[in-house]
Length: 125
Image 1: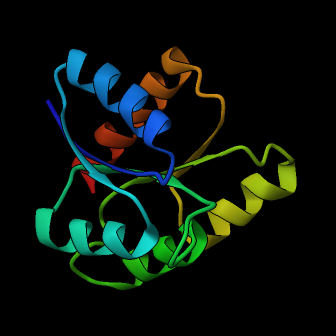
Image 2: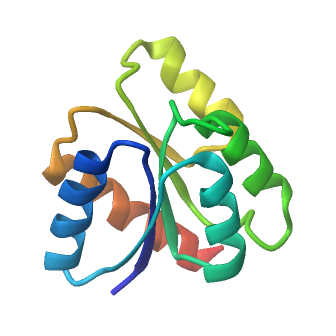
């Protein structure tokens, strides 16, 4: 399956997501802030990134902008995960370079569909 980087500062959210993804057959990497997320993406070359937008050090919007402006990481699909659920928040995530957007609390079935779609799109680009 895929190598997925979870960039999330909440340990409970990281744990819940990583367990579900591992059970689904994915290999999971984790980062606790935006700076670690950027470094992990550059060194580990994941197939997909789940990016919390409210992060310490560097927030998810800035981390995504940096990843998408770097030729070595720009092809990696980024799905924003955020408690911000307004339509303007979705637009802000997409403008930062996210490939998709999902809200917290996470609906795992919906997120799984978005992960599969992003991985298929990423494989084609």
